[in-house]
Length: 260
Length: 298
Image (cartoon, rainbow over all chains, first blue to last red):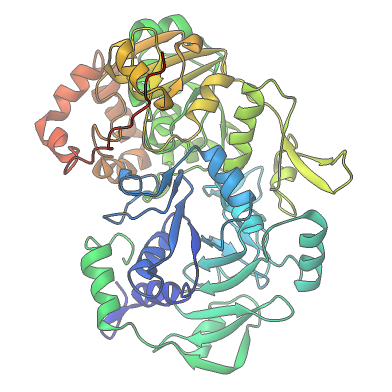
């Protein structure tokens, strides 16, 4: 754990991501870091958040933080459990999901995501998991949130494979295609990393709005393979509160599966 | 189990052992390894640890999937070893989750394709040219379509069935129903054999009718380390520990020898796992659904 004072960078990332969910109603939960961030939000800023797990549960209230997103705890006490055909067809493609929360291996400045391969598709250096539901979530959820660890290997100039489209080559192109092709979604809206929080500007490009405590702009630039845009109104991310840290450490992830 | 696999799974077949995290029939996968089937096309939305074991054991020629990993843990290393680099030997055909679901639906409902709003502006249709674009005949834009999927054999795990194979399940349903109806042959494996009257008392819970079932196997704990809602929990410890086993080819071989090839079947497997594991995966409590009144109408 790379502790910065009393909390780790991972903890800051999870807390910052959870805060972004304030005011949202229906959130589609991806595997990994999104899972803990969304459950933290349900305990803090978004008590009415309805969680959709792609495995087929709506309105899940997990009594423990599941290692996998297909855990039995997302079923017991949920509002509805359904086939994946119903989930992806009626709920997601039908336009009922406010936020799709995704992880990523590589992302570019316009929020296009790769989770498929590093290197050439036909003979990859590294085989990643692939789309799962990410591709259709990116297209059909009204807004897309991304949570990922940031480095010059993950914040890249050109992604090796476009698994999930973001703002493509910029907001004009993306808006035109969304309208022409009937996507329900408006594309990426926030990216939260272990260094900072980004939103997307009018060009559809990532803009650094919140810098986590103890992180320098220089460190962010080193961990970004393009000249990163920084908001003139950039602020420091408020550090995790005692309550947020208690929830992450004692309630949600006592074994440290997500915060290591 | 031995009889069902022997009669219904042949070399070169396409085989779908479905179940999304839940109800994954490891017992059937192990029996396929024991019977040394070869050149199989393995189909699953999420290949999971069972296909890592089967690929590691050398039963597969090709993998059809939408998400490849050990959920919450990391990679499937045996599959990665034969699918990365210039000398990859495992053929890969990949979709997204909804694409795979749509393929099963098209296969099950005798349609030439299934349309979906996915894949726009991604590299997936480039990587897999079976994902194609189609102009709507009603003049309102383009959709992507995926081809029907009709596995030679689908293997479905469930909580209970009657002797005729009428099968009920609850909890996460994944694409079990669609995969079963799409297949040429269906093997159902259940935790519990029940009387027909139990099935008829709650017909809404029947997912697969005996009509399409070719073999029924009663195999308690047949899904471990996956789970059966209400019967036993997912064995997350196993999934975490699998990572180290699968990273090392020799360890993987030794594991297969000890836990698959060296055993006669699931009963012996559970005996070997011992009471500690059985206790670990026992649900912490009960959560009964309230009774439903269907009424009688004479």
